[in-house]
Image (tube, rainbow, N blue to C red):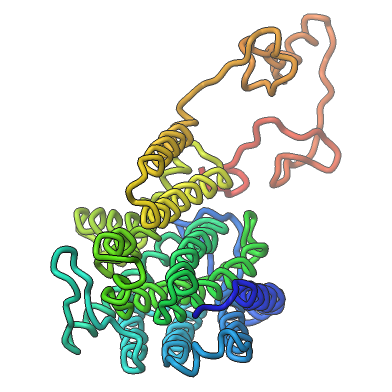
Length: 446
């Protein structure tokens, strides 16, 4: 039987605390070793920011597994299953590849090969898909090669989906935290609520993943002081994929029939995990959609699928007119709606209220997406209480310097001649700041 949720909360808090405390020293280390790449054309930030945040996240992962191993309620996960060790082995390998990429910018194909090897390491230690629960057919056993290929494909897809969405401050960590929270609710319900011991490792992985993201987010929110880099994005993507593989390919649907009371109830409960790709797609649907659109867009334009561009979903939100913080919050909203909606539907799939609430919240999300298209204006009686951009009456235009000079000549006054050379910002040591600095003289690009 499962254990109370307080032990998971303890594991989550320790993971978050270790990640948070390590991020500060890791930032100083990243600056010291020069892991601060120059700003690229597709980047949104305007100042070089250190990477290697994945080092702190990996430290939090190790601390969470260590604490869980010494808790009486969670120790059985390590004694009865080899999946935590498989996760740690694969995570160490993918983390090492990410650290090298953050420092030396290794080739994309090398990273892809490393992701496949990390997935293979987990497969060799037992973290693999054993069967597929197919609706109307039942459990279909997979051969060793079929399970290996499907597991590797799922790991690689999830890692790259998380990596692609890591483009704004706090975006990837927040979205994965939301996804892992929804995943924890589902896995904990299977284990503690229905006594399915095979769901225990996935529940632990989700709790640790939440702690890793929560501990890193305070340092990564806009304006970010450090980026997680590929060492962090690939790491949390692998942990999320490991949880999905554990609960999808190793939970026996026949056992669920006994616990849920019959085939119909088990079918409703297993709806999000009938096909292994369905659960990751429902949990991280936004990053997965971004990945698919990026591959189609780059292939259509004759580019490599690994070529970077500014066509991701978060870039388009900025182009529409959303601010950085609003774009991140909108992505959070849609991730939470899809992830928690899938979990709620798996619990009460026969309830129409779930569908109606999801539809209503989707309408709210569409309004938020189109918010910059609207041009709201306050009534005249409320203009003094709102910012100028919402007022109907236009403010009086300011007098330009040329107009002021003309007024002086009309009054018979000669303007004072100011000598000096304009500085970079259009100001001099003895004269006023120029209103319209000539950027070509200062060397700034137009």
